[in-house]
Amino acid sequence: MGGFNCSSLSPYKVPVLQGNIIEDKDVGQLVSGLSKDQVLYLLGTPLLNSPIHQKRWDYFYSVKIGDMVVAEKKLSLIFNQDNRLDSWVLEEANLAED
Image 1 (tube, rainbow, N blue to C red):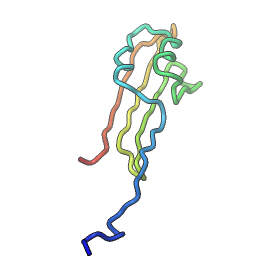
Image 2 (cartoon, helix red, strand yellow; image 1 turned 90 degrees about the horizontal axis):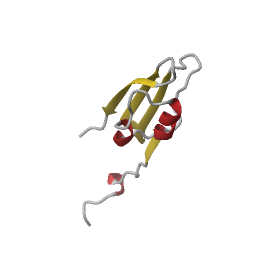
Image 3 (cartoon, one colour; image 1 turned 60 degrees about the vertical axis):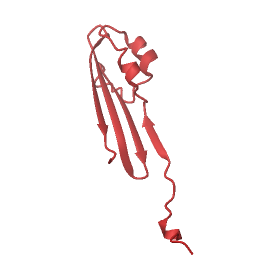
């Protein structure tokens, strides 16, 4: 018989996507001065929209396989006193081992 045995098999682990999908093409369409409605149309409902920080919206996206998080993105948007987009920061982490 060959060198194949059952202990060499491992179960397939399905990638789990959590949060808002943040695509580069959508982030590339952000410009200062967009209204909150325009941002909602472009990115969807933010994952975090705190009544304490009404001028800040946070979008978060992660990809997890099994117990390991392999990628994360966090997009934070800041609105001015007129509820227009003022600035944003995109943080990305690719945690997969090559």
